[in-house]
Structures are given as C-alpha cells and as structure tokens.
Amino acid sequence: MEKIKVGVLGATGMVGQMYIKLLENHPWFQVNYVAASPRSAGKSYEEAVKGRWHMNTEIPSTVKDLIVGDANNVEEAKGKCTFVFSALEIDKQTIRELENKYAENDIPVVSNASAHRHTEDVPMLIPEINADHINIIPIQQKHHNWKKGFVTVKPNCSLQSYITPVYALQKAGYKVKRMIITTLQAVSGAGYPGVASIDLVDNIVPYIGGEEEKSEIEPQKIFGKIEDGKFINDLSIKISAHCNRVPVIDGHTACVSLEFGDKKPSKEDILKIWKEFKSIPQELDLPFAPKQPIIYREEDNRPQPRKDRDVDKGMAVTVGRLRPCNVFDYRFVGLSHNTVRGAAGGGILNAELLKEKGFFD
Ligand code: NAP
Figure 1 (cartoon, rainbow, N blue to C red):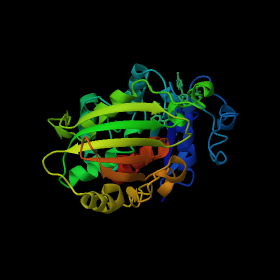
Figure 2: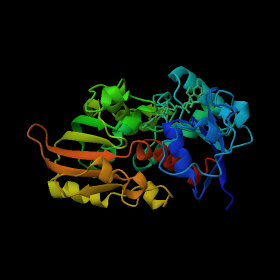
Figure 3: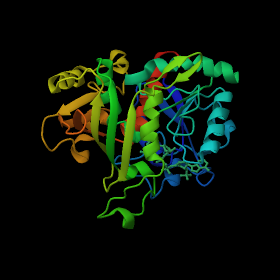
C-alpha cells in the first residue's frame, strides 16, 4: 500500500518533534512536509532543530533534509501532503484562521492546538470515547462549503490520565457526578524552552495558565453528543481541578476523587471494568491503539511517570491506588504520557480513525 503523505505544522516544537519521531516507520503515513515559524522557514529540518532536538532517537533520515516551510503560507503545503497535523503555538485567533485556511484549501487538519476545541462543529476526539463525533465533519464541511478539508482537534493533555478510566465506568452504567482532580504535570507540557529551570528545579509551581479551566470544561464536550448539527455538551459532571507543574520531564499524573450517582460500583466492579475496557480503536486494530487502553497496577507506589509513561507505545493510561474516599466514593491515581497519548500519539490515533473511516479518500 502506498503511504499517505502528511505534513506537520509546528514540526520544530516539542509536540512537532514527537510527531516526527512517532511517524518514522508508520505503516500508513509518511512525513513529506514540515512547517514552522518564519524563523525556521527555508532551513533544512536538521538545521532548524539544531541544538533543540529533544527526542531520544536520531532525526529520521527521511525528514532531516526536508526544507521547512512557513506554516502561515498554505500555498507551500499544497501538493505535498494529503492532510496536516497541527502542533502550532501561536495566539488562538491566528491558529483558528490558519487551520480554517488549510481546510478551505482541501487540506484536512488534525490539530493539537486548543484554538478550535470549542468551535461548535469541530469534534474534540479521543477515539476510545467519542469516535462517533467524526460524524459532525460532513456538517462542518457544509457550513464552510469545504470540499475535502475539515478540522478535528484533540483535548488538553492534562485530561488524558483520568478521562478514559472515568468514561469506562460511565459506559458500564456508573454515572460520575462530581470529581476533584489534582494534576502533577510534566515540563514537556509547556513546550520548549517552557518553564525556566530556576523556577522548577527543587520546586513545584501551583499554577498553569488556563489548564484548570480546560480540565473542567473540555470533558463536557468530549462526553457530549451531536444534535441538530452541533455538539450538545454533557453538563451533568462537575469537576474541580488543581493543576501543578512538577519537575518531571514527561508524563502527567492526576490524583482523582470521584462521586457516583445513585448506582455505585464495588472496587471489584471498577477493576473488572477497567481491565476489560476496549473500544473502537482496538476493534479497528488501529496501528497506534494501545492493546489495553487502561492498565491497573496493584503496587501501592504506582503509577510513576518514569516507570509507566511509555507502556504500550506511550498510548495506554496507567491507573493505581484505587481505594475508598472519605469525602466522595473512590480515589485513584492516573498517569499518561503527555506528548504521546496527550499530544502527538493522540493526534496520530485520531488520523488513523479518520483514515479508516474514509475521510482522506
Ligand atoms: P512549542 O514547543 O513552543 O512549539 C511551537 C511550534 O509552533 C514551533 O514549531 C514553532 O516554530 C511554531 N510557531 C511558533 N510561532 C509561530 C508562528 N508565528 N508561525 C508559525 N509557526 C509558529 O509548543 P508545543 O509544546 O510543541 O505545543 C504545540 C501545540 O500543541 C500548542 O498549541 C499546545 O497547546 C499543544 N499541546 C501541547 C502539548 C504538550 O504536551 N507539549 C500537549 C497537548 C497539546 P519555530 O520553531 O520556528 O519557532
């Protein structure tokens, strides 16, 4: 099978580099175009990331000589890629307009940026939870009179450590009413250069701008449904989030207390639901789908970022420490790799779902 040519916008950044790493040897997709800011445009990719390549593998030989385009100029991408992954870090309005422009020019956008997360006709995808939300795409195309182009987004990386475990319980009939979450978020989540080392070594920063709001509001759309051509958010779950930046390189941890509605599961019920949970990406056997999306660790001192973030290509969520809560019903700790499951890997899984459903044909 001939591979689909893809582009990466923001290819020189933290998430963009992870795309370049993860897409090396991808069975369906091949990076054929890279773009970033005008500062990098015109250089070879190798030159553009010189001194700031953060991956633990070498730059793929198929990418290092590609000439970096200016992501602001859609014309440069034309003819080089069937769709683009967007990992841009610019102001939201500019990203919204730019991503629309790619779609308008018949280049679908699989985005990591937050700019379009609350646009009424843009799906915010976690394929294990809401793969059916891609059904909004033809409606989005109709709204804009786009022919082949469209925009999809993925949610914030901080959610990823607990949203699938919570969804699995809800799907099994145990509705969650309220949650309190404390996140311990890795430095790679802030991009590069991110938080100054003097602020973070031997320290914790109890504030990440905008992150608590995203953790509290985005699940409403993720759990929502399509009605009359737009998303109706699920407002039935109340979330209170504390988001902290901690001196960990990769891997966001979340300590979660949750309260169920009238129907409450036993600890054994929860463990069984998590163990048996499988969804669309596993059924479709998508290349980036984790075999088991939720992995429970029995040890008292797990999950831990260093030991658990890379499990199953960095795409599984590891949970542990499930125990009764003195205020709500249960407590647990969740962990996921923020630049893989929470960013580039999640984007690739979204693209695989879209490809499998014929959206790039
Ligand atoms: P980053 O390391 O700061 O990289 C930003 C990228 O955007 C670089 O390629 C940069 O190009 C490009 N860029 C900056 N200004 C530009 C401009 N004016 N025009 C065109 N391109 C421009 O950021 P990141 O952490 O990779 O995050 C990228 C996106 O993913 C953000 O929207 C972020 O919110 C989202 N996200 C990040 C994570 C994470 O864990 N890091 C997780 C989920 C979502 P130059 O190198 O040329 O400056």
